[in-house]
Length: 60
Image (cartoon, rainbow, N blue to C red):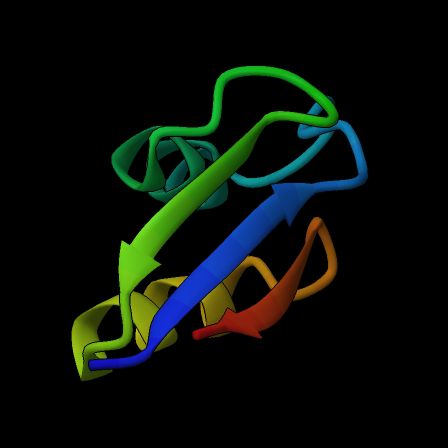
């Protein structure tokens, strides 16, 4: 199964509260944090919500 590498590239300061909560749910706490998650629709949806704060790469 494919995996997604999600990296926080921008600060959440000044963002909406639900964007901050989404970052925390993904496991991102500060800039340049990296998490690897299973490629599931739920994870893709969360990454899409905060797409202006993160980068997403597919990892095999």
